[in-house]
Amino acid sequence: MRILVFALSIVAVAPAVQAQSGATPTSVSLSLDDAISLARRNNPGYLSLATGRRTADAAVRTAKGALLPSADASFSGRYQQAGQQVFSGQSFSNSSATLQSGYNVGLNYRLNRSTFLTPKAAIATRDAVEADITGSAEQLRAAVTQQYLTVLQAEARSALQDTLVNTAQGQLDLANAKVQVGSGTSLDIRRAEVALGQARVAVLRERNNVEVEKLRLYQQMGVEQPENVKLVTEFPVATPNFNLASLLDDARHQNPAIVALRARDRSAALNVDVAKSAYTPTLSLSTGVGGNSYQYTNSDFLVNQARTGVFNQQSSCFQQDSLRVRVGLTSANCGQIQFTSSQADAIRSANSQFPFSFQRSPLALNATVSLPLFDNFSREERVQQAQVNREDAIYNIKAKDLALTADVTQAFRTLTTAAQTVTLQEQNAVKAKEELAFAEERYKVGASTFLDVVTSRGTYEQALIDRVNAVYDYHKAFAALENAVGHPLR
Image (cartoon, rainbow, N blue to C red; front, top):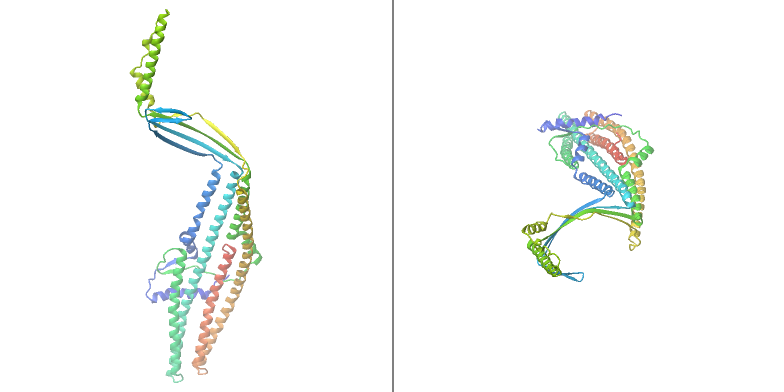
């Protein structure tokens, strides 16, 4: 594996050019790994997709929570005016308004076959979401890598244009020297001046392109671009030593997109079982504790009732006592039947229950086994929908497998061709340089015209540009192969 010296040397010219233009010498270094790390922390699109992890975790927690009983607590209050009301055909009346309150703490447990299958389906769905996030991270890495290479390519082309300006200036000097010795023409000078002007225009265009591509890189990263950024990662050019069959096998096992589809297939298969579990019995258990309080707003209502009852008891006692005396029996001690103020206070105190003096209700436990018989074909519809989703997941896996085969094969062949192209373009650049030097020597001795020099210079310029483009086409093809496989290969 070797590093292309030409590409690195022309990129190294950029700081010198910035110093000549008055730029601040202090620069901010940015490696490819740093760019990818910043993008994964700040790119809005990736972060938006990554939030799906929390939803998937919550779904798993909810599915597992179905294995535990649910609990609820309630508190109620009620006010009723005094008056007459009818209950079960009988009339009741109260001369005092009432206050009522109650509480209940209940436990409920529901169990059927889907209770055990749903957590597995939720976990499979979460695995698919994780694979989607991993795939998004890989896509972001590929996009940042491509843009990083585009910036390096723009910098290399800009540095190359600086050298071509020097070449054009040298040819102008050569034309002027020929005119001074009487062997050249003013047409040669004008052609050299036009070539120099075009080279300077190309420099401006390429420098502007560098800044535009940097802006796009930082847009991918999701952060603001600082001043004087310098890309420092070096990329080697080497003949690919990959085996297409191993790359295809690697992609089928590790590509995040197909991993996510397989996880969704597992989730869809479990969801079919969940839908079919609607035909199985369901066990429901419930229990709870509770209590109630009941209070008359007018405590004297109860006191008067009790006092009336005591008076009635005294009257009855006196009547019985008169009868006992007449028949010669001993007299009853009716004087002991009295309603005292302490009894009235006790009644008032016992009435003061609202809102928290509860009387606890007896504990109860309910158990129910239910078997759904007919629900207007809703279960059948859910089962069919789940089965269709499972078939769609299988088809998606097959489609992605075919796409992976095509993408990896295409990227591998493109990379192989790009590596060969780099070698050929290097040879073309060397030959074009030799051709330009030969044309200049012939022009110096008067064996050719300046038009021959201009033509050779155009060939030389295009050969250098093609060589730079070939180098970065190779790197981009390598990045495309990594994206197709689903993970870095170097």
